[in-house]
Length: 175
Image (cartoon, rainbow, N blue to C red; front, side):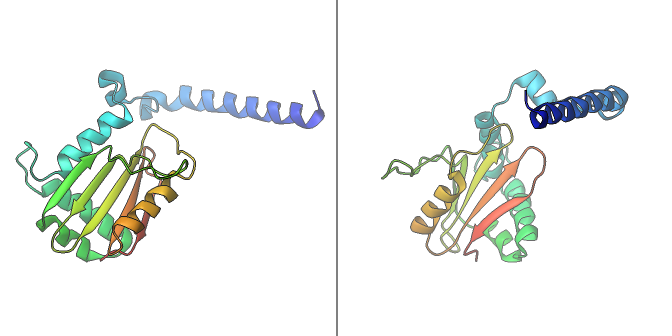
């Protein structure tokens, strides 16, 4: 084994040992590995997307109307500095899970986890990519934006959700 490789492996081993020690010291206080949703219900990315879509849909049986949608839009409005987004909660909305993008070419297409299609007051679409337990596919977000730009030339947005709160709201042409 070469000197640089051995050195790298030694550094990784030391960091892993430090991580184990840290976890042993603080896990009881911080519950670093505790994830009750996965532990008890085994939620996958698709299931968690279905739950999110259910709460974002004002017509769903939760009987809360647009309360959850309004909060979600308020969050995005703050991130994009566009208060007008909240007004969309009052318009007509279709919520779709695992929306299939047409695949005209070998590298096109895909399935955004949730698509919110607003038809009033203006035609507007928010595609949500839920990456809480999965990794990105090649050019995934770029393909989704290309579809949105082609299908919603007026206004659209792509929101990217992560398990660690890593912020990424990709948008184009918001009202």
